[in-house]
Image (cartoon, rainbow over all chains, first blue to last red; front, side):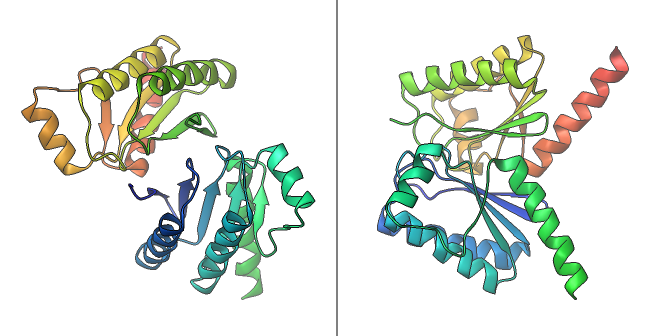
Length: 124
Length: 124
């Protein structure tokens, strides 16, 4: 299986998840993202899940884990493009994606990242 | 099989191809892109193929076809992220991706699109 490509746009990394994630793929993505944040100095990570029709607890944990890793490496993660049905199911399952920021689509995700950077700049 | 998601960022659409394309998937992508260009009024399409280790004549034709459709709908297509080995194989196979614009990565693709828009503005 191929690795999921990580696209860099300025200080933001973009990942589009298109297939159901397996254990190894998720681990590879975490590794790749951590390395890419470290080498590129990216401050934001956008993860698009608009292609996913099911987000189970495994994927939920993966998203939370990626958010945590990014945070330690001083980058903010925003999950974008979640389908309405997925959001409904997540809440019904009691999975609240704690610690994971979300935005409706890529454009709003980019806005959120820009806002976060400004806030951080003020806080320093 | 899921459809390949098309992300919109301002006037640009971004597609990341991660799996080997089959006939139906390629047709669905062409349809979706044409519709999305039409409804969003996007002026540029970026197709990232960094995850592809093989680009055969089928994928080559699909890229050319998408470029052609976009052009008629007044949008410029740029294929980005081609692996060096893929470029070598393409030339060896005599596939020159005629009519398809390429750029090294997403960032350069965005620059190329901005440049193209300026040129078009001057030409008008």
